[in-house]
Length: 232
Ligand SMILES: Cc1cc2nc3c(=O)[nH]c(=O)nc-3n(C[C@H](O)[C@H](O)[C@H](O)COP(=O)(O)OP(=O)(O)OC[C@H]3O[C@@H](n4cnc5c(N)ncnc54)[C@H](O)[C@@H]3O)c2cc1C
Ligand code: FES
Image (cartoon, rainbow, N blue to C red):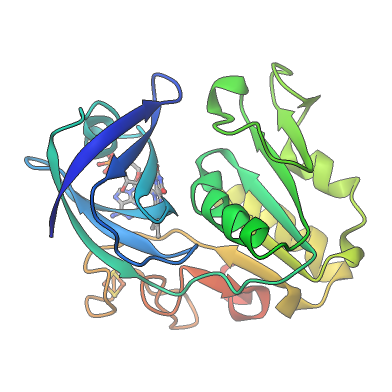
């Protein structure tokens, strides 16, 4: 479906939130296949019902970060399995991994659920949102919050007290978190949002299959820790 970009919030030179004029009834954790005329179609998580938050890493994402209000994009979705909402939650995000988790955070707050956030990035430019109520921030260069990584902050946290832990970020971060959790926590309390190369987005082409046969686009992108042991 063609949708109009109604507003573009530039967070830094490489990151922007794109507001669209259509509602795909997306839930936190779900994604859409987004097409910018003249470029590829790429998967992007909803960062709210009517926004995508994108970091420029290649041609298509750069075109999206540079897009202007009034232009049109193609959107297919919403696809995939959403986060399961629980009270007493901990959100852990690295960099642009906060995009789907911001949406989740808002939904948890709307339900009056308790939620804490651990959020890190290379520098303050990449910490897109810094207004979470109960949060610790880390930057690798010390430009905001704790000087270090998300993993350093997670290691200081009493993880056992949370009923649900939600994680999204680069696969190296998720691997490190997996190693911390596997010794201490019940796997079903953890939900990971995973990234793989997505083409069809609807479970047909096989490009996003994990080692255990599950498809990121259809069975995920949100998985419980017990479902994705094969990836770690
Ligand atoms: C379910 C899901 C949700 C995502 N949500 C977001 C989001 O909310 N915000 C955001 O900025 N990014 C998100 N991404 C990543 C985003 O899709 C890639 O950054 C984008 O596809 C890169 O396209 P490009 O043409 O700009 O760069 P390219 O030059 O094509 O690639 C740059 C990098 O992105 C990877 N990539 C390229 N195409 C895909 C693809 N179709 N699927 C997965 N990875 C790809 C490549 O392996 C490469 O490492 C998500 C990915 C997935 C799978
Ligand atoms: S992207 Fe085609 S099966 Fe997942």
